[in-house]
Length: 397
Ligand code: ADP
Image 1 (cartoon, rainbow, N blue to C red):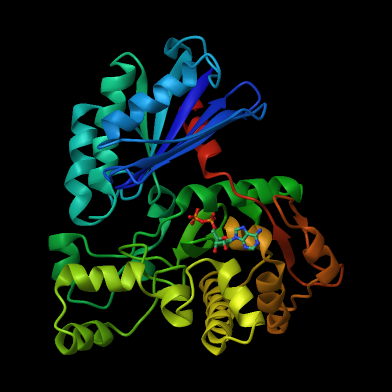
Image 2 (cartoon, helix red, strand yellow):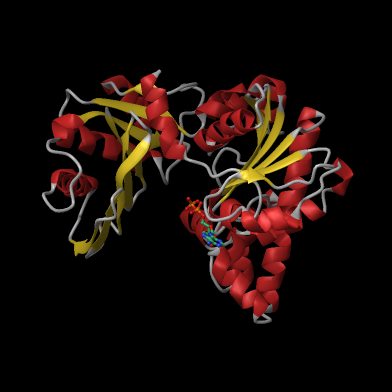
């Protein structure tokens, strides 16, 4: 059984073809810069065949055609026919309070995803378009399923998801914390429980997903009880280009002083802030670290802010659960940058956390393992996430 997992952005389309028998990825790739003059297409198969080309892709429909062709291509393909695809899973950013779990796409579901664009203007519309394009490309007979980044967080209690704004705006516009990266936090919590030989319902877990976009989640009895991202993914702590928590007054002040429109302000908060905005160097952790090592003061400050803010957010998740058994790290930074993980954990002594630095240095590049000492009161793990794998698992159930 083959499942095609799609992660669409407004100008990109990432895909993985997953073989459900052994959960292996037969091939994966991406089309980026969709809608630009030329798009980059990259495709890699499990046995190492690589395709890379610039192709004119004006919209998602064309991107799906390119992907479909690559899947069955004589030289780069992994399927004989597109009929071998049993289902297409789409990662959707915002499911709000409507989608507490994944949903098989119907006309109504598609419309609901589109209607939720007002809560996620940068994502939901593009993702609804991608679903439509997938239906046109693969035909009505292939099941399309929507998997929402927000669903896992629907167990967060009201005291944690409401903002201190007039209640009528929650009723009128559904303004509240939704949280994102749900598929990642869910995957990691199940996986770590399995790794430790424990039942997920017996653990208090703080899951740190640290990538370009980052969030931390408090998971008690297997359920999300709080998380750092909010109404949108801009909330929380410093990310690649997103600011994380700021006093809302900064927004009003800047709009007034710099004469910014709403969309310019949205762009500033989402695309010009974070590691990029503070360092002035890059949104990519590796570049910022390199600059810091070369003596760039702003880059050094950005890295200090990152570790400091993460530590404080971990503590707030511990407070939410009145304790913690396991602390996990995942995402591009969490899985590869042991210096960030070490610098965060070194200052969690008040929790009785003790990191084994040697182990942390070894557990990089996709490895998973325990990186705390035997004396540590909490178990610290690095556990690579696989958000895509959860999509077919959802389809299977
Ligand atoms: P996204 O949120 O886009 O999925 P990723 O999870 O791929 O992002 O994480 C991207 C971040 O991970 C970048 O800041 C990048 O610098 C960092 N990263 C990726 N690989 C490495 C590595 N080998 N060493 C250090 N940092 C890395």
